[in-house]
Amino acid sequence: MESFNQLLLSLDGLLGSAAWFPWVLLGVGFFFTLYLGFPQVRYFGHAIKIVRGKYDKPSDPGDTSHFQALATALSGTVGTGNIGGVGLAIFLGGPAALFWMWVTAFLGMTTKFVEVTLSHKYRIKAADGFYAGGPMFYMERRLNMKWLAVTFAIATVICSFGTGSLPQVNNIAQAMHDTFGLSKMVTGGVLAVLLGMVIIGGITRIAKVTSTIVPVMAVLYIVGALAVILYNYENIIPSFSAVFAGAFNGSAAVGGFLGASFAYAFNRGVNRGLFSNEAGQGSAPIAHAAARADEPVSEGMVSLLEPFIDTLIICTLTGLVILSSGVWTEKHMNRFERADMRVLAGTYTDKDEAHVKQLFGFLSGLDSEVETYTGTIVVADGQPLNNNEFTLINSRSVAEGVEFRVGEDNYSGVLNVSDGRLVNPNVEVWGNSLLHSVALTNRAFQKGFFGEYGSYIVTLGILLFAFSTAIAWSYYGDRSMIYLFGPKAVMPYRLVYVVAFFWAAIEDTTIIWNLSAVAIVLMTLPNLFGISILAREMKDTVKDYWKDPEHRK
Image 1 (tube, helix red, strand yellow):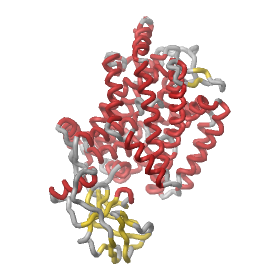
Image 2: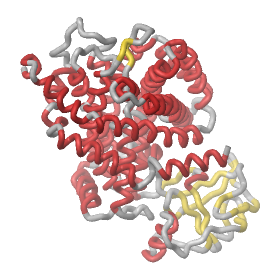
Image 3: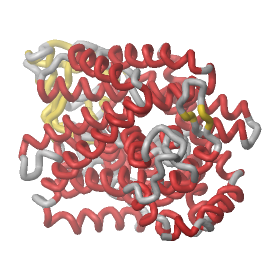
Image 4: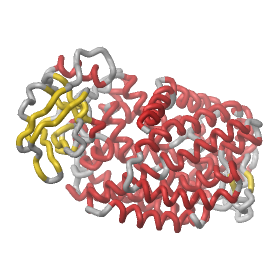
């Protein structure tokens, strides 16, 4: 299993995490933005009118309203990436990463407009009586590339578990346990039952639930974020300055050893932007295919609002919370995850510029004199006695005030370290270090008007965001199963989806997450390839839409 996990990491390094992938993603968005004349700007107001129902006709074919389709697609994109993903992007790439998330969202508005329009145009009415659409349908029906469509559909099913469900409930269960002390099994069981009640009802029930959850969770999160940003109002302008300065001066330098380069901020910002708003991935067109509309372009216009809401509003608020609160450069007491921790030979400090440069080089895979430590750590009552022989790094920062524990008790004895990794599995390591992901966002939300209660907003945000994501992705998966195997495959898929959802609440989902990292690329690249081929058809379709005088009102 470990070797398979390493294979997945290697594949991801060649695909989604590779330097060329962000350029392909942005390149397609940039091309369509110019080719279609900045539709994300020109059609923004018209899109709002469509969502509000100005052009709705009860006789139009479809299963949901424009707003319900938008809410379903948003529930799939607004998830833990908006909370923890932004924290990870800033942790890895500094403030400039937020700038590249904005760029990804702005260009992604056009990409989503295109992919949704084309997918809606080639949707079908499935044998179960409901509409089914998505990139796999235009790939087969228009491009005559069934092999490409099958690849996309299989990757979508994998992602429905890997990004849409299993890690989501794992995050929920962990957050509920840490904040309220609830058993992970109880959290998983209750949510699995609720999930089953929603998704077994199909798209009409999914649309009703998501159209209720999305506005509630958005308002809750926005209020909590503003409570921090306004509390630290004097840091708002400096935060924006740091974002733009990091983007244009080629540096993303921050506290610890995050510091870096244009490449770090660019790569992290673009990849987290895609993970957050899914523009170009081809998932949202599956939800929009169910919308009642006789004009595919109208639904495409609705979809261009998604990256704006998801990234330019919600992710920006998260980023400003983290930056204005100042916690992103501060060390805080926390339990160290083994994946974030390395033990290095010799003693280093982050107060020495030469040490920082060497440590950054080591952590970034560059030339460095730093070596990992192999040996023992002698501990008495939780405190290391031979700490002059090693330096413990956690979350890319020199750890301070390190303590070793077993449960609630301080540990005494000898610990073994091999190639920088602590061997003893039952010993927990605590100390002060930088934070990232959800832990960073959680700490930042405590620096506002609500004080420590701000962490409850993060926990509830994770609960609502992640649960709604699991609902939406179940629909993406079952439409893909219909494409691959027909309507009879839908109910077995839903049952497996619910059972796996419960299982993931109490089990490690790392390998599923790594599998989905590869599958995301197998969704995105075929979709970008397909819509690029159909660029001329897309432009003609938009022109035909505006020929109708009704649409110009």
